[in-house]
Length: 165
Image 1 (cartoon, rainbow, N blue to C red):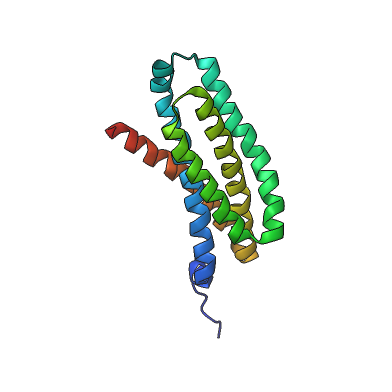
Image 2: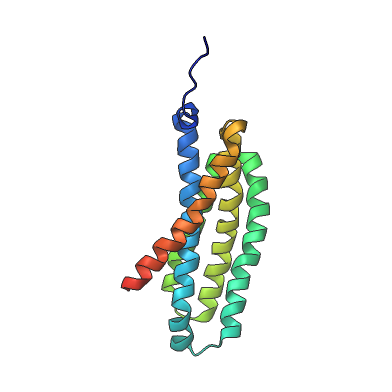
């Protein structure tokens, strides 16, 4: 008699679900910030009398620093562990996101967005590491797909919030 197989999601333990939730939320918060920033650009441009080229440069600085952050935090995660590295990157990202909103001029915003990028890139790397290493190999593809869907959810929620502001 053949043994009944259970649904795949019942094979995943609590700590594996927590790892996925942490990665999902990290990606979602990153997208939430990126999209809200995009919505705020028009107001920033008017308030500080800057042109679109400068705003594009700011966005590029954030993405460039996220590439550097991914490399740096990948190395750090190998030394201090995935969980500690992920928590650190989310903290950096969150603080710098808040500082972005409190910026009084273009230079403060540039510094905040650059540092934010370091945390964002680190979160992408460490979140993916944590999920891929904690989930069983036969379910990693699903887990990474779910984690990355946090980006779309974050974008959607930012658009929803922006529509009410």
